[in-house]
Amino acid sequence: MTPLTAFDKIWNLHVVKELNDGSVLLHIDRHMMHELSSYQGFDGLRGAGRRVRNIELTVGVQEHILSTDPGRNEDSFAPGADFLYTLRQNTQEAGIELVDFRDSRQGIVHVMAPELGIALPGATLVCGDSHTCTVGGIGAVSFGIGSSQVEEVLATQVLPMRKPMRMRVVFDGILQPGVFAKDLILYLIGKIGAGAGTGYAVEYAGPVIQDLPIEGRFTLCNMAIEMGARVGFVAPDDKTIDYVRGRRYAPTGKSWTAAESHWRQLTTDEEAIFDREITVDTTLIGPQVTWGTSPQHVINVDGQVPDPQSISDPETRRNAEQALAYMGLTPGASLIDLPIQNVFIGSCTNSRLDDLRAAAAMIQKRRVAAGVRAMVVPGSTSVKRAAEGEGLDRIFIDAGFEWRESACSMCGAVNADKVGPGERCVSTSNRNFEGRQGPNSRTHLASPAMAAAAAIAGRIVDIRKLGV
Image 1 (tube, one colour):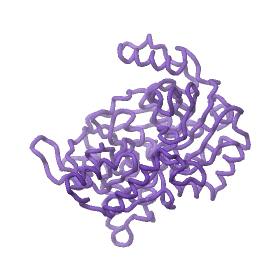
Image 2 (cartoon, rainbow, N blue to C red):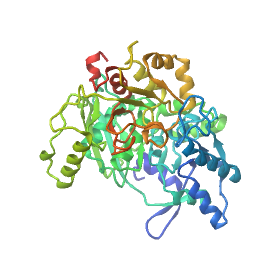
Image 3 (tube, rainbow, N blue to C red):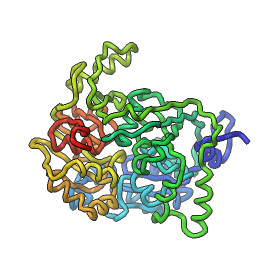
């Protein structure tokens, strides 16, 4: 029998039909929808006179263009009200379950889907959002789709797909003090480039990944799209099964026994061949901070901003020059002690309970620096409740952070949470593109611990110097 990767095994089990052009029809086990990218699919169905094929396999959630204000209502962010209403009406008309923003299950789709057991190991899951790859942290083959594909899944529960190539990234070595999953993925993207994963499904493996908590695996998989890959993936293991066990929609009884037995088979065979393999020595990785306008524009916090003139490729050099100009930085500069005006702890990348714990640990009864707006946006209502149960909310509030309701928030600035023009933000989100957090905003991506420390200091700091 031909040795297979874990991805191959899951893919092969979901092929409904092989097509003449080399693509396949792939069965989709779970379809998640949010208010910004689903309405076109329903409009298309109505126009074609079609119905949703499997209403039980689709779940809607309000989480994108939603206010994070405490005590929010549907009109708290007026431009989003129509989107919230439309998703509610579309799901009600189709008979699809909706997790409304008032629901205790509500959260960022990529946080709440695995949290509730809607997403499961070995399943295929799609959503009209590029960061759907997050859910690969529990061994699901999950990926973002476009508006026309939303309609296809609603109508047929399959998608025509070409099988991607397979890449394995092995993280080997020792995780240094002050280094988290966010640092691992930023370092990787900085080394191989923002386009290196294009056309691949990426499996993260190695002893460092085995030791990572599931929350850290979600962070790694979340940013697979930032290196061009639609799929980021960690093969299921004991930690995965322990995470899924007891989730609200997870299998139970005999179904659980059968599911667990199946999931344990979804490992990469020892002799399986990948199209590309990369090994990362984690002993070289310190806390990471981005300096430019792409996740690949990243350095160790104690490093220096690179000189574009040292870059041989003309296009890459131009991009670096433009990034430095946009960010108001110069070649050779240090990011340490660079003043900042905003800190955002949240997003589908880093808004889970472990992330909030790591951030809270940096505060140590200190207060947010004068002139800094610092906000914490839990990834789900469940995360928020759990954090409050541990007293983390009081740590943040007493320090001067805003403690807000769950939504995408300042990650994409599609609600009222924005960074002002020319202002800098240390953000735990996934993208630092020009204008991503608001017109002419300047974003520095970092881990939750680094972000919290920057809020207290009012500047970018090396958390290793703070005794982490």
